[in-house]
Length: 385
Ligand SMILES: Cc1cc2nc3c(=O)[nH]c(=O)nc-3n(C[C@H](O)[C@H](O)[C@H](O)COP(=O)(O)OP(=O)(O)OC[C@H]3O[C@@H](n4cnc5c(N)ncnc54)[C@H](O)[C@@H]3O)c2cc1C
Image (cartoon, rainbow, N blue to C red; front, side, top):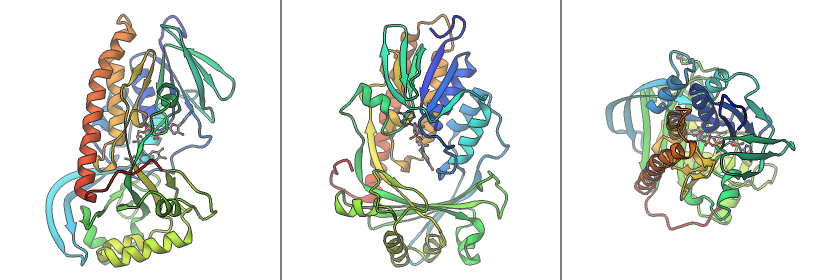
C-alpha cells in the first residue's frame, strides 16, 4: 500500500474519464496520481456534448466548483429536410456543453501535482493486494489500484486483453466548431433555440450551440457545433479521408486544420448538394472541420485483480447516445461509492462495481448500435481500420 492511512490509485489517462475518477476517489479519501501520455493540455481538442445529469452529479459528488451555467440551453428539437423546410419541431429543453468546459473545470478542481503529463503506462505487475505500475519515465509506482482510463485504444487493456480492439462501425463523423457570429442572420434564425437535425438517405447532421472557447454562454460568444454522420467504406475511401494534408495516414481521426484540401473541398461540395441551406452554410463557414471514425467496443469484464478499465477503455458507445463523457463520470462516481468505506475489502467492492457497471455499459453500447442502425441503415460489418 502506498501509505498506511490513505489508499492510493494510479490512473492511466488524463482525459475526462481519468479526471472524473481522480476527483471522485479523492472525495472519499483516496490519494491519486494520474499519468497522461500527452505532454500538452488536451483542452483544445474536444467538441460539443450533451449536458447529461450524470456530469453534474459527478461534479457535486467530488465537490468540484463550476460555473453557474456550464451549458447552452436549447428549447426545441427540430428536423429539417434537404430543402430547409421544418418537418417537425417539438419542445424538448436540454443543454449542451463543450468537452473543453468539462475538462477545464475538472483540471481546476484538482490540486497541482496530481496530473503527471508526458508519462505513459509501460507495464504493471500484481501481487495480490498491491500493484506495481511501470511508467515510460522509468518510475515504478506501487498502488492499491490501477485504473485504466486510457481510452478506446487503452494500453492498460492491451496488457490485459491483448486481442481485443474496437471495430469500425462503417461510418464516420465529420465535425466542425465555429463562432456563433460566423453565420449569416438567416442561418442563425433558422437554427436559434434548437437542437437541429437533418436525417435521411443513410446520413445525419446535427447541430447546436455550445459555450465559447473561454466557456462563455453569452449570446454572441458561443460556438456552433455540428456533426455529420456519413458512411465511408473501410479500405481505400476511409484511408483517403484519414490521410492528412501532410500525406500522413492517421488511424482514427484527423484533427482540426489537418484535413487535406481535396477532402475538405469534397466535404463542402457534398454539403451544398445534400444539406438544408442553413446546415450547408454552417459547414461552409467552418474553417477547420475534423473527422473521427465511429467504433464499437465492449470489454468482456472490467476488473482484473487490482487493475480495472473505466470510460472508453471499457466501452466505446456510439456518439448518438450522447453519453460517452457521462458514462465515464457515472463509472467514476460508482467506483468511489463502492470504495468509500476503508474497512471494506477492496476486492469485494470492485466485484460489486463491475457487476453493475458492466451491465450498464453493455446496455448503452446496444442502444448506440440500435440508434446507429436507425440513422445509417444497414451497414455490413467492417474490419477495424
Ligand atoms: C481530445 C478528445 C476530445 C473528445 N471530444 C468529445 C466530444 O466532443 N464529445 C463527446 O461526447 N466525447 C468526446 N470525447 C470522448 C469523451 O471525452 C469520452 O467518451 C469520455 O471522456 C471518456 O473517455 P476517456 O477519458 O475514457 O478516454 P479518452 O478521452 O480517449 O482519453 C484517454 C486518455 O488516455 C491517454 N492515454 C492513452 N494511452 C495512454 C498511456 N499508455 N499512458 C498514459 N496515458 C494514455 C490519452 O492520451 C487520452 O488523454 C473526446 C475525447 C478526447 C480524447
